[in-house]
Image (cartoon, rainbow, N blue to C red; front, side, top):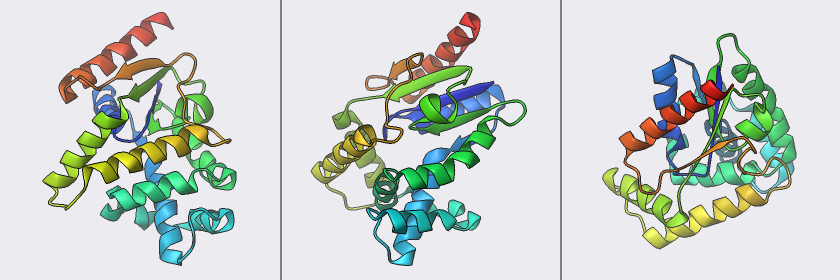
Amino acid sequence: MIIAVDGPTASGKGTISKALAAHYGLPLLDTGLLYRAVGRQVALNGGNADNAADALSGCAFPDSLLDDPILRDEASGGLASRVSVHPGVRAALNKRQVDFANQPGGAVLDGRDIGTVIAPHADVKLFVTASAKIRAERRFLEMQRRGLDVDFETILADIRARDERDTGRADAPLKPAKDAHLLDTGNLTIGAAVQAAIAAVEASLRRS
């Protein structure tokens, strides 16, 4: 069984994807981490994430970079959104994602174009979302808990800029697949969101 979980940053799709993978005993791939690694490698190379050639060179990152906790910070997230607009970068990372999705037994993939591009044949497609303000509040509180000095308006502006880049890019824009189940987590607790996702998966399986 292949489960595609798409959605914008801080929507809760990462938490939901992990819960679904654990619930159904499936391997999980956070595809956004691949783009974060590319963005981080571009920075390490001294390149410009907005330059197509620099971004493509970042695709040669070592696998060890995927274990670096710096990929989870806001700067890496911003770099990921910037490098992902380049078609060459998306093409370079697509095979790795497609192979993961099509492994025997299936998988859960968390990303922005899983249900539309990477695994349009997925058995279940979820599109997890919430308003930009709610997502910014979540990220703000998360960073505060980590002891970081952050400004809410800056985080909100960054999330809106990422949304604009992700939905406006010509190649594989962020959008729900036509047959995706829309899950708005704005007013849900983590537990309720996970239960809603499991219910959506079960409903999709019954229909198939």
